[in-house]
Structures are given as C-alpha cells and as structure tokens.
Amino acid sequence: MESSTGSRGQDVRYQPDERPPLPLTIGLGLQYAALAVAGVVLSPVILISTVGGSEAYMSWVVFAALVVSGATTVIQVARVGRVGSGYLLLMGSSSAFLAICVPALERGGGGLLASLIIASSLCQFLLATKLSLFRKIFTPTVAGTVLILIPISLSALILRKLTDVPADTSPLAAPVTTAVTLVVFAAVSIRGPGALRRGGAGRGV
Image (cartoon, rainbow, N blue to C red; front, side, top):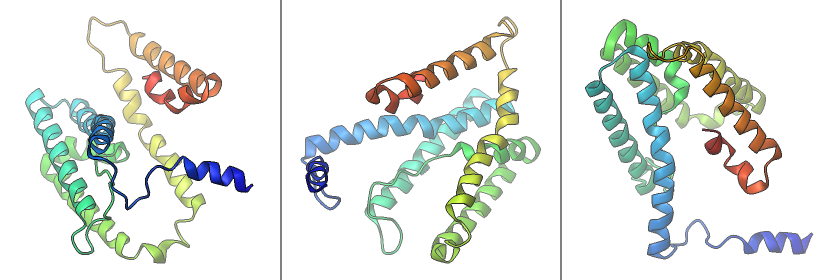
C-alpha cells in the first residue's frame, strides 16, 4: 500500500502553490486555452444560429463571450479580497442555459436575455456566499438528478437543430452524422485503450 501511494505521489511534479518554469507554464496555458475556447464559443454560436441571428450579431456575441470569460478568469486567478479563488478556474459560457436563452431571445430579444443573465448571476452570488448551508439539500443524489435533467431539457433544442439543414442537403445528413458520432464515441470510450478513452469525446466529434 505504501509503495503504491509513493508511486502515485511521484507523478505529481508541482504542488498547487509552486511555480513551474515559464516555458512550461506558457505551453500548458496555451493548451488549456485552446481546449477551453471551443466551449466558450460553441454555446453562443448555437444560441444565435438557433434563433436565426445574423452573422454580424453572432460575431459580436462570440466576441463578448470571449472578453467576459477572459476577464472573469483573470479575476479568479488574481483573487482580489474575497473575490476570486486564487487558482486557474475557467469561467465561460455553458450550454446548460440554452434551454432558457433560446426562448428568451426569441420572445423578448437581447434585453430580456440580458435581464435574465443579470438576475441569474445575482442568484448564483447569493448561493455562493451561503453554499455551506445548502450541503444537506444539494446532496450527490440531487446534483446528479439535476445533471441528468440538463440534457433532457436540451433535447427539444437538439431535435430542432437536426431538422435545420440547407435545402439542397439530404434529410438523412444530420441523423447519419449524429449516429456516426455516437458510434465512434461509444466504441472508443468502451473498447479503446486508456489514452484513447480519455479523449473519446473529442475523437467522436
């Protein structure tokens, strides 16, 4: 037991408060940024394309998402007073809110969407200040159920996008692409070696 614990400890090259060499820090930072940018950009693109927004509007929304995500990530790292964690904690857009953002943007425009964003952020700030009081409520069972309900709430939006194809495209294009992606993802995740399983989602896409 001691030998296995010691071998695992040897794999840790730097403690959380240590400073790696600058070239290594830059290289790892660029890798992390490259992986993170896709997620930050994807949600605004899905949102604007679903509601039929223009290319110019989509570009502006993506730009705003990147700026806000970058600024808030810097605040997390810098930690000013009680604001920020002091560690690299990525702040970005989340597809979990698409089920609310799409109808809000369709029915009330950008003003309604901005109002909902501000209201939801205030609720999150309030929960964060008293998070320890909610541990008995937000149990792993409750949190797991909520995570399961997120893709269910997005199912209508996903099915809507499957039928949103150009006129000269085969109606089977979207379902076939989805099926192939799921098969590749499942096959790599279940049957592939360890290194491939860790990147199964990316290879499926």
